[in-house]
Image 1 (cartoon, rainbow, N blue to C red):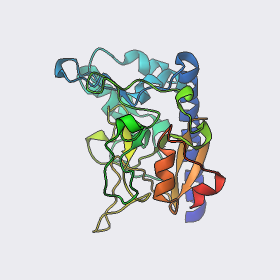
Image 2: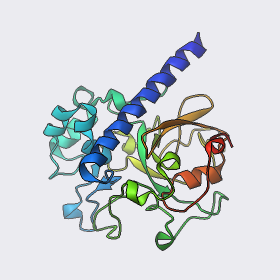
Image 3: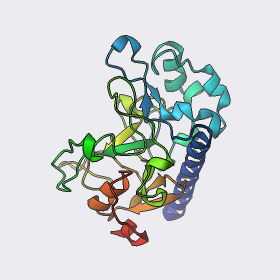
Image 4: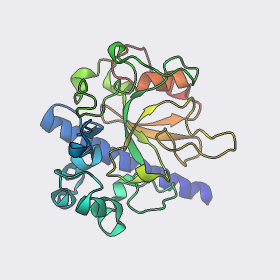
Length: 260
């Protein structure tokens, strides 16, 4: 019985990501780029508005009314925006909730954008510092934008020279308990920097904040740049995950890579 219930939850999670993937494709059709991971992250905090990619695609996932209530002249958690995003009566987005995950708020977001890869040596220790090499927190399809990162621009399929089939756009980042758990937070993105999927710390506690993490046994789902949703096994190698979270490193992958 439990297995059947989890199978149903996995199907719903997959459908959620298919809907989000379609929303991203519709945004791309209209703008020739995907939405940035978050916008307006500025060095001058007076103009630090910071909006989530999820807010930008609301009209494309049948949430036009919610989009119309959002004030893009204010930060995501200021005034009415904060109430809109964090309160369940307004902010509950079922498309952002994985049914296998525990939620401390119905306004939580279990799916995040990929803005790059923060380890390149594959040892889980060495942090990438190489914007000019196409690595690091700007190496994915959803970098942050604003004066804090003046080099970063929204990216589109034309920038995905690794191919849309093998470049991750969105992934599960489920069950977060920190302030970044809401779907509308500007931190609804991450750069892959954990050596394994569904990582735990030395005490066996989940390392689920800003990492690829799910409560599904055996792996998690991701949306790729072409809109396809794929299951990533927990045995997928760190090296392959690194390759899939960057858009233009010219790595060679094939269908068998997902099981390694």
